[in-house]
Length: 461
Image 1 (cartoon, rainbow, N blue to C red):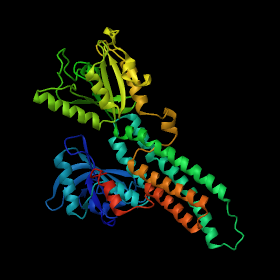
Image 2: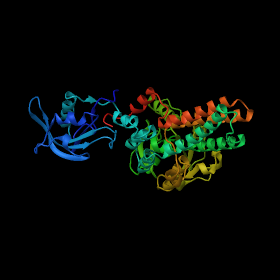
Image 3: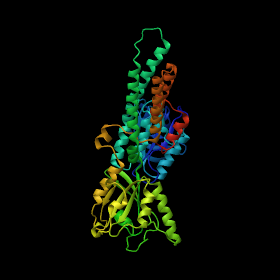
Image 4: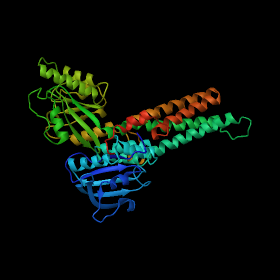
């Protein structure tokens, strides 16, 4: 990638639409667009003020043919998305107008942008840090309004500010130790070891809380996969239909109706869920049903949480015990279905799980479904609404990994201080902890990491 290149790309989805946007960024953006621009009023783009829009035509100067009429938006550095000159061409949406316009721009000196290169330039030119750049793709991929709001808070710098605050405090501690190393004979006000230990403990606790927020943040960012599991004819498909409020799965009184996994998406209080209805788990000699059971078990294994469904119109049997065994090592809710015809022979205590993990419903009557949705939400999300939007949480595994390594170095520094080890070693370890946090904002980074992050973006963003 060459930062002195002028890049261009189509920023809207390919296909028919009202408007198609082609974006350019770089020092020659205006000059290149002027080569394909014709103004009815004979205006020059380079003469226009920044952040203004003008009307004109896109023209192939080699043939004199007009490609399209368009609006041209001029934005001059540094007050732009990339801190470079940017031109955005709003032409008619459609494959030909946009691709023909892009081809003309490439012929006249622009280079096709790499995936995420506009946002990468915004990072490299110092307009946003790496955490904020990652938030851009989180906003694009948001599945609910709450997920988008959390990503927006990260884009505004909430995560960066908290991380930088902790990192600055670690660097201050490190500088204090290094001052003692460099000037041992000077009368320097070195803070007492106990104060340093208290500071390290406080910083480590703050990072630990951030680390623990990851699971909640990940669920909003990526969604929660929920597998509905149970033996045949306990009402799994009826439950799926109730949760989705539509007839997504076929429901009959015949056991084994569902022979493959069925999935759909659901929004519970802003939490995106991928609900998976699985085939009833039982011994079968039918090849198709056996394959369905195999896929069901794989879906349960791969899911974030499981909803184990039991039929309370009859006592628990060996098949139910098998289901309990399958979910014993997972986050699982126990749904007691068919409460409208509950049998006295069914004993909920025989499930052997805490009452808080059990909920009674009737999928046939629609009883308890709202309570189940609330239970799913609270089962997945531990943070309060206030903490979600007024506190700070992380949603990216890269961030969590950096935080965990920073905590390890802090713990190591604490041990060194307690053991009275040479200050040079303590200073080095503290500096390593700060460097781990610097990776989050991109203060410390590598080309491989940047390429990996921005390769996930679409071309044009």
